[in-house]
Image (cartoon, rainbow, N blue to C red; front, top):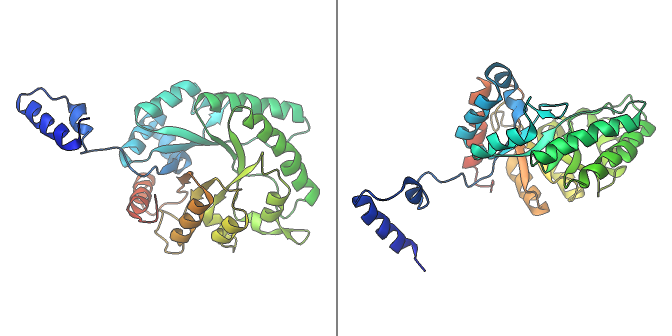
Length: 291
């Protein structure tokens, strides 16, 4: 079997003769693919997507080094206006994978119609190669009742999760800070977790919003080790900019729980969206606690 030393020696001889292919040298090292699979929620660049178009933004994100993508642009079977297979190909051609999606459909008076909407969405995101579909917000807040919460998380989301599982996709919910208020003396977020099926509904913890809600993300990761397969890594602006978030114990506990995927989300900016998204990548790529 040819070892690395023999390979490099042979490559150098071929190079002297002008025979070596560029891809042969790149396989030795040089500009290799990013070792850390850092994900990005594309909502972070929502204005650029509107102004520049999704193709250009994907090219920019690829050059930054991001590998996994979470979308926020689904409508009527299309992802950012593209056929799901086309969107997947564009991402793949740029060395990235669309692995998660945010999309919303509130419960109406006709659940059968609502589930038809989700079935079409599931088909689209399955075609795009997604592993996760996430509801980014719900109407369940401190003004709701516990019956309202159970109707969403115990019934509606259960049905959506069941349908998604049939396509090999995990369905879940993403929190903000209002879920850390209370209904009937119980923290809403805890009630959501405890009144939903672990086999059909996962949760995407937004670590910044947990902190803003007055809670510790690590404590939730410890208390519910199997409910948070994916995270949103967020700060007030660019990741690491505020100094208020201690990401090291969060990553350590999430990895211990078996986390495989996570996504940067930048909602507010110190500079420009692109600069803050790049700063976020650089911060996490340099962090020893990020695998």
